[in-house]
Amino acid sequence: MLWRLRTGAPWRDLPERYGPWQTVYERFGRWEADGTWAKLLEHVQVRDDAVGRVEWTVAVDSTVNRAHQHAAGARKRGTRMGMNWKIRAARRRARPSAGPGAG
Image (cartoon, rainbow, N blue to C red; front, side):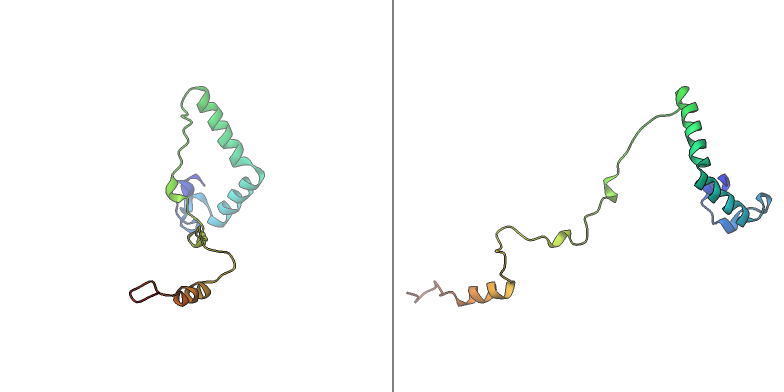
């Protein structure tokens, strides 16, 4: 099981010396479900932390934080609620011109 986790290979590529891949896969699933892997990890972390071999560093990579796809379409400040763009455009066209010859 550790070979598969270390290499990242598909379960079907498990070397024959470990037995049928289906058996190893099912055992892995049972150990995950009953908490065996969590207990093993905790044991190793506690043991190694006691002798100073664990460095507890947390790193956050902001490149994985993305805005929702609709975030770019937020309403802009200053636009009036209840008026769609067609009505606003028609009102702009209907205003009297302030150009030469006006008023």
